[in-house]
Length: 323
View 1 (spheres, helix red, strand yellow):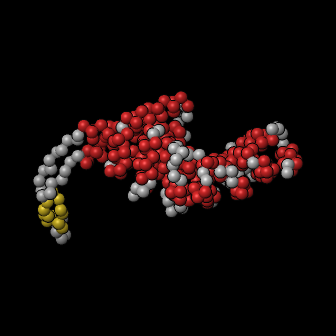
View 2: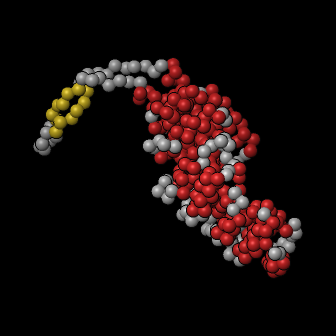
View 3: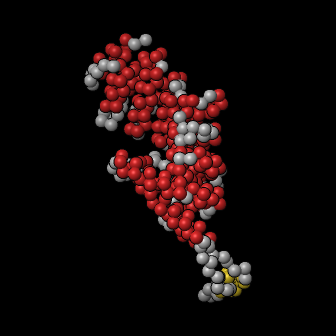
């Protein structure tokens, strides 16, 4: 499932709501409702004065509204696939978001830290597009936000930022925590993939490996897909059989990711080539013949440097010849 980006229809409205101040003069007045008992309703008794937005509030309000629309469009083109993906259009859109986010950087940081929830959600994603290391600290702090969608969008922002110094332990924990919402778990995996985990050592590497192994058993296809790809990048040959078990997965995205992950492991680790080829060949009768099997054949061809077409018997003979 693709992560959600829940943002404001109008970010300026949220700031405008902060721009008015309620009068402290309040009273309670009884209101009779038909023949029933009287109830007391607390409310202001004086007209509240209008407090216009400052220039700075107007500027960040307009920026958030503009970024919201652009990010929603980017989401439909890149993440959800609800629009036909045009590489050039995506590039132009990302450049436009990056320019606007960089221009509004200080305001975005202020909003992600102190703004209303709608503004925090927009700022969390937008900061990732700035491409600056200065965005890392506020995005990491947003992982502690009380709103789940702010957390999910901050993880998405971290995946867009892709900073190699991103601490991974907390992100890995969110990915493996089944009590977290789907959007948080999926975006945590996306963030880990974006920062290139192959270089990790020690506790950080162990944390990501453990989360990815756990994620193979997640009920959410997006988490399973991210987990297979992470384990391949970590060169976790101990997970070959577990990844192979995902080849007949009902989600074709998961099945293709499993095939690609196995092929990568087999191409990098010499001792893994035989087990990987045999696992791929064994999956052929069980995977979807239209959406998955062609990809498995392609991965076999890359690994073998040979092309036996769709002749399963020849592929099986080749697989059994490998150590």
